[in-house]
Amino acid sequence: MAEAFAIAVGRFYEDLAERLVEGATEVFDGAGVAVEVHDVPGAFELPLAASYCAGSGRYAGVACLGAVIRGETDHYDYVCGQAAAGIARVSLDTGVPCAFGVLTVESMDQALARAGGAKRHQGGEAARAVLRMAELRRALQP
Image (cartoon, rainbow, N blue to C red; front, side, top):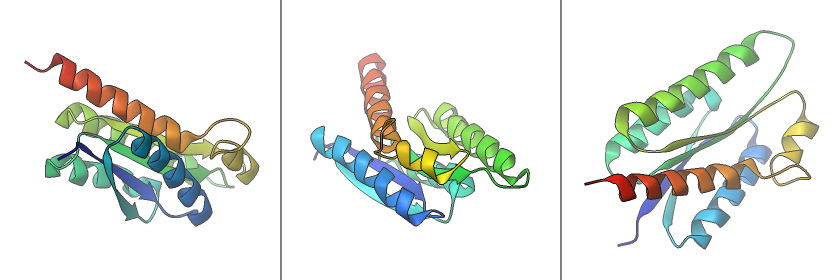
């Protein structure tokens, strides 16, 4: 059976989530690997979802996708920081590559530009990162 990868996606901004998943899925499909999507409420829940996916032994890597858009309070800073640190910790603790494909932006326009718009596609970038890190892991395993 082909190697499998996971997408953990925060669905707080549903339209952005769909765009990010589409970009990541396109990259995984192009690489000829299986992919399963796991939905969570938002970016704050992504580290735990990544931990569940990595700990399952079913996936060679996890692309964590979502969006956090700055508002009027400090909530943005806490969610972004904890999501990034948590996802990194899962990678380091398990050895399973987990990519931080979370848009951390000031506005919806910035988010759209980074979800397949004029800037780049963060979903696709996260999938490429996970694929590369899984390849490196395989190459270095005894």
